[in-house]
Image: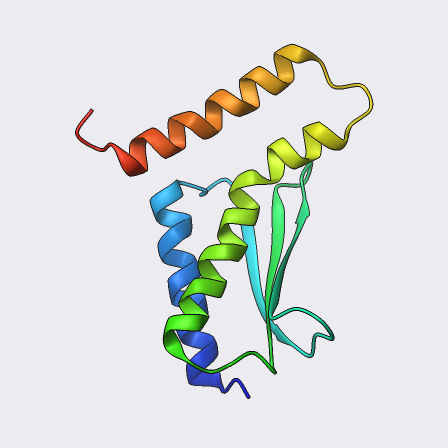
Length: 115
């Protein structure tokens, strides 16, 4: 069972990855909730640029696992623009290309900082 100090590990790690990926344009809120099936989730209001990131109260309280969960949910946020565009019926090729290139730019800054 996740305790408050475990939840802080999750939130701190999520904040770390938000900073690494430069996702500062999002209004983020973190929650500790009773979830039925998953150990966490990321729910996004794409137009409002807000996200709700939650950790389940029943997730394992292992710090390594909590950090992995935090990374996973922030990665969901990182990919949400592509997800939204792919699900849109009226998406143009130009919108897809622009979203893909924004993601590539972020990954380049994170994975290849010397360039």
